[in-house]
Amino acid sequence: MNYFKGCLLVLLFSVFCTAGLLAQKETRLRYIETYKELAIKNMSTYGVPASITLAQACLESGDGNSKLAKEGNNHFGIKCHNWEGEKIFHDDDQKNECFRSYPKAEDSFRDHSEFLRFRERYKFLFDLDPRDYKGWAYGLKKAGYATNPAYPQLLITIIEDYQLYKYDLSGETLPPPPSELEKEREYSAPAGTNLFQISLSRKIMERNGVPYIISEVGETWESLSEDFNLFTRELQRFNDADRETTLVPGSVIYIEAKKNRGESLITSHVIEEGETIKGLSQRYAIKERSLRKLNNLMRDEEPVPGVIIKLR
Image (cartoon, rainbow, N blue to C red):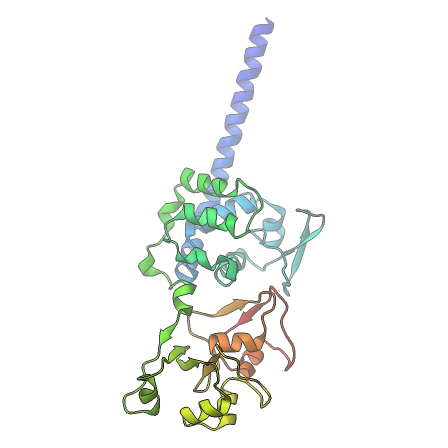
């Protein structure tokens, strides 16, 4: 009698477990169906594989059932990091930690893509084949997105169990990786101009459509101004430098005025430790005054690490 009771209990337990797993699978399928088009759209805009976006969303939000997802539309567990929007507090690694709260889920998905696209530590991921979801999964762990050593395999399992790789677009339909957009490009000076004559003997590069050189040992503002047929103060203004600024060898020196906004595919930058607005101005060939105006920053105000700086 006890034997049959034991068998019955085992059978009932198996039925309940199977039912639970089926219910979880059904919930996850509905969640994926709800957000797959959004993940594909964001992939075409930012380059983050749709499979990775969906797998991370499933894992981080509990298929949309977590407190952060339900109450704060935060589907990726992104913490505040100097966030200036609405906030939600939740126990995570520590008690009552601050997380970002969004008006709608679409904002969370977009912020996740921007979080990866515009942070230095994740930029190497965009050099991978966009359909290399395994490379992305292990790369996220390497870059410090998660502390769980099993994180890559958890993502890969979700992607393969639910065939999320079928939503990944080919490289031809994606924006260029950050490394491609920021690499050195030689400037093509118009024939017959002073710049053209100089370019025959000196390398002239360009960023954001603005020509620049790399200063060499022994050069001064005065000597470069003479070489490029400019006033000394004019050259300094092109580089947001004052009269007392010393010209350091190896510096980027623009020889035409910088732009008021960045290139179309480089829209934001996340501030890292030690970065300044003047430094970003030189890096992206955008006038310092314009950068401050775009981001509502006072003349001497510097953003803290984690803040997203708009470039256009």
